[in-house]
Amino acid sequence: MGRALRTRAGVKPVFVSVGHRVGLDGACAHVLSLARDFRLPETTRRADALCRRALVEAVAGG
Image (cartoon, rainbow, N blue to C red; front, side, top):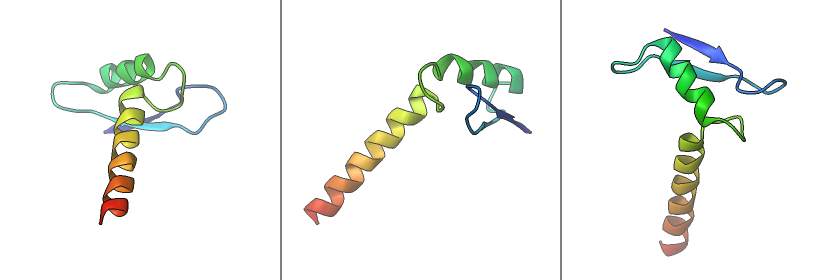
């Protein structure tokens, strides 16, 4: 079960789903609280940046 949630007006939605001991309404509230400056939640943005940096380092080193 999930929901397409717009974190800001005029941007593509983020797809939010239930998790372990988190209902849909609670998950959406968390996403909205973490997506203050950007479309994606800050936790997702940081994880993506770390993965991209690790990929660049792996390609450059090997």
